[in-house]
Length: 366
Image (cartoon, rainbow, N blue to C red; front, top):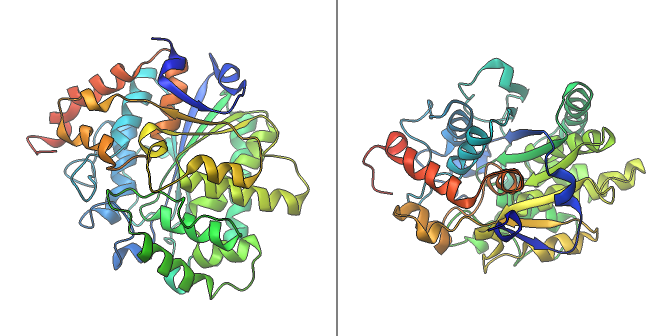
């Protein structure tokens, strides 16, 4: 099969050909959300949720989780999508950078792979107290992007995220900015807690100072969003191709970028340098509509989804992805799209995850 058979493409674009053979950098922006400590708005297992961003990035960079005995699992015990990301970066020898925008636990990774941005986690979005510094975080993101773009020898930046509860903050930001997002935002769990998430963000939005993008972020966003938005502005100016690796969380980042580019009178989204890359699992989520969300933003941004053929897996936890577990995270779809264009196949990813399964999880039934 050709790489194009393993990538679902929504809309015509030459973007994929532009990144073929180009040198990559994988960046993951991590944060925690205080609301997840007392409300089940995330599909991540509550017992490990505060350790999840750290443990995911330890797995991606070091090949094993150190902050937890084994890599994170979701509420149904399906393994983290970081297993997919690890397979890609190890098999393709892709450099990785972690940007910490408020993770509760700092990952145990080499200093050369770590950029601290904010030690405080995202606050309580149900109270409209997500953060006070979204404008500053945007500028910090721009500076990170400028430095990377000026010094890095990569041509493609795949930007992922690990923010448990982040689909709720994405819903809040999209609704706050006026998008028809109520029935279009995905969830990392089998049963999307839609009513709970709506109640949380509606309460939070009541406390937003205005409908300005930074006030919306301060009320109900998460700290990943302004940081990624700032990085994208600078990386596009440095002529770097960007895959925003994720689903509805990265759609909310696109909406934030659209608002800010209007303020700054900079043209970013129509530059031809930006795409959104996700997984087939999220694309097929009947409770969300990533294509509709991106189209509503109104720009001609290509959307791609990576296939994995997990229905053929011998591991139950991987087959559960096909039934709606996990779906996406840690840039799994975006990095796979890059890799499929540059030598890997879904079988390579699945074989790697299966062959490392017992090393990661022991005899745990997943």
